[in-house]
Image (cartoon, rainbow, N blue to C red; front, side):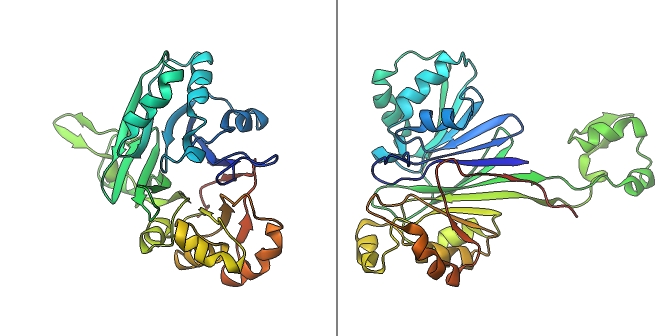
Length: 303
């Protein structure tokens, strides 16, 4: 099961009922944060979420509304008696940017490990997550992220018996261990069926629509995508500042055949966002507005 919570959905500046950009996922005791805008700490407190188990922070880019909450967040993690290492992923320059922000948070009781992205697409495995980072089209280097939770195949009793694999080894093989015994090597693929469908969430903000986004989001259970503007007359503004409209995000969701779209990262000038949704749903029916604190539990599909 993967828990997903939108912590902040505002773009550019916080509003009375919208903190700046952040999203938290939780899986198997590990929390992963994407972006850390101003107010992220408060948003987590409001949702009753803990800082200590955040093991990974991914940054889309280094505009202030996506990273300005980091120094205080790190200090709070330190005060929560965290001692284990913290992994950070972000575009090239991550260590330099975070180092500068840490001028006001210099002493931490844990190590920060940096993973700087330089390629158009990169894959990283951390804390049970398969993280696919993909470059998008903004006016500074910017990445989106697909988070996947893989699922092993079912244990195949007939195959295990057919290969005369001792029953005492079954449990360890089922849990991914390779075993050497009696001059033979037993591997998990000898007793497991083909991998089953896992869980996939894709998160993308601050970009024009690209084929790369469609490819990365393909088949996602949940696609969280920026919808900076909803007003039709702001299409040119979206192009100028390299953002997306509600309708462009919906077209990406349709092309990527995702199950559900949540719109986020709204312009502070946007009023009455729900009134635009009927037109959005004409493009992609399973579209809805994100809001601070919106959460969902995604579970593996029953076969």
